[in-house]
Image 1 (cartoon, rainbow, N blue to C red):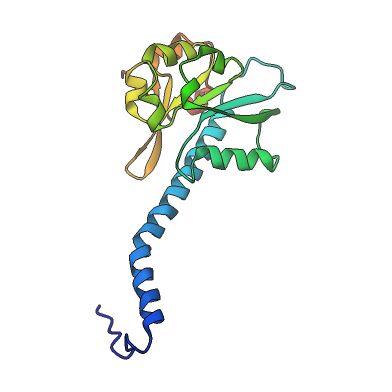
Image 2: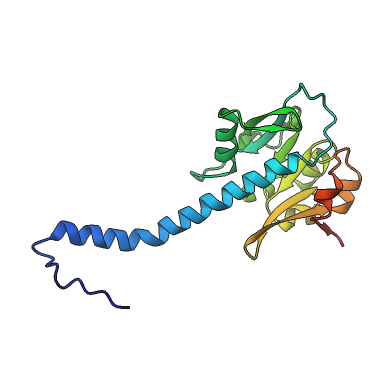
Length: 195
């Protein structure tokens, strides 16, 4: 389909032409941003729902702390979960849920994770941290990476976007040696590594 704007003279209506050109140029970016927002909302929802299928050992009066890394993107999992926390909508199995950001400069300090119940490693972070660190963290904390490489290197779980869907991968060895236990309903949906 070809659209002709010959009836709109560019000299007489320069502002209208500029608006039309900007709309045409911005359309792909607007679509990409909309897709990014949707993906981050789904990922945040999946992380939150995962927390409902974990046998937490702490008392229900104690909050669960979701530790997230600073993410330079304007719309990310941190933004979604923090907004829900501010609205009082984060609660898992009777536990209030708090979010806490960890700066990238602090990620190698084991003390940063002491109060974490769950740690989400986005794509940029999980490749910067030494595998020995997230293997050690996975002994007592639910660790979630953003790609298969995370579980291949010893991380406990990963949410991977494949063929238009988020899929849960679990490193069998890390999971079996962890104190964190995921309920069978969620385990039945996961893919284990190695098989």
